Image 1 (cartoon, rainbow, N blue to C red):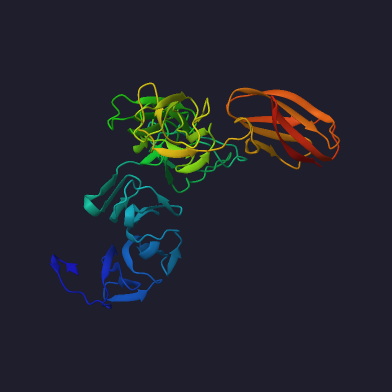
Image 2 (image 1 turned 60 degrees about the horizontal axis):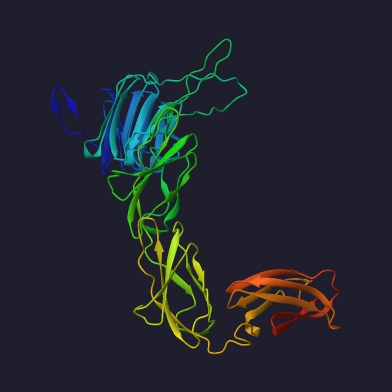
Length: 485
């Protein structure tokens, strides 16, 4: 105890840690501590009592009949002149300090927790995640909060007096209001009061909200490998009028590709293979522009994945279709075909699609090697891995028609089916369908290109039964049974 300039030892009724003290008068002093302890000095002696179930770290009294104690996991108790009553705060962070004056005040705690008391306790933004240790508040005009790592927060005015103050009056039938064109990354405070012809209520407790400072990038994921044409996407924030996307191969974004979008995505077309790119996005509304998002990177693909003919396969058609996995945004592909793995004398072809149909039959029973690379106007990809295959040794009738070159599906069918015909040259073929009596129910001449040819066949007014499909060229022909149900 301190009296007349001298500190003397006071007899304490507890042995647990005492954390904070509040003085109402020289004969009315309160303290709090661990193990649920609240202590009181009446001018003669200290007494103690257990309040609730938590450790307490902060205590404040505004007069002899009104006091508050705060502690573990957001616990708050209020003294009403006779007993301690629990007050609900709906938080789980430890509260370390409290200060109340004229039924207005603040409680502070771990991880930047800040509660305001004005008609009830409400969580407000402190603008920091540092632990807040102690608070002193005096009315509406002054307050100071201190905490970890030199944190100090000061309140020096009554609030709600900034140039951006907006007052909205609504009829009693409306209980909601939509705010638009708010600044990004800004904390806003709001309160409400009721008005009728004869009176105006007190203001509600003050609550706060903080707008998103910028967007969060979504796809492509950071570090992803991508095609040359991509759809970049990010979070969409209601009220944003336009987003700006920047992509550059320099992390300083010295000469970026830029795109604007009124949605949360935009297409990007690139020209270089195997390049690392950096990308970021900002948002804007009618009155404010956000900061740039976090920067993500991606790398464009630099090699083609082959599909068919599969590596090492034999008995491949003498006029196969070469297929590979395409890269979006690649305008051209170059295909090399050779009889030696070193491609000493290659046959080169260029195509705009991720496949190439051979133009003429190749040598039978021969091993070939092939590889593919992508081309843009300014760059060339690396070659794909080299694959090989061996052509078939026997083709069939006149080396132009064979049973394996003909496919019909579905079969059975209703009189409508797809005819798939593998041709080794550009030729005209006769397609006939006859019933079991030999009557021709379908007769058409078709032109085929080398490779796979698909035709939709519709038989006119046929009955259920077995029919004979005949494909002919000159004197040679092949046939297949089809069943109409």
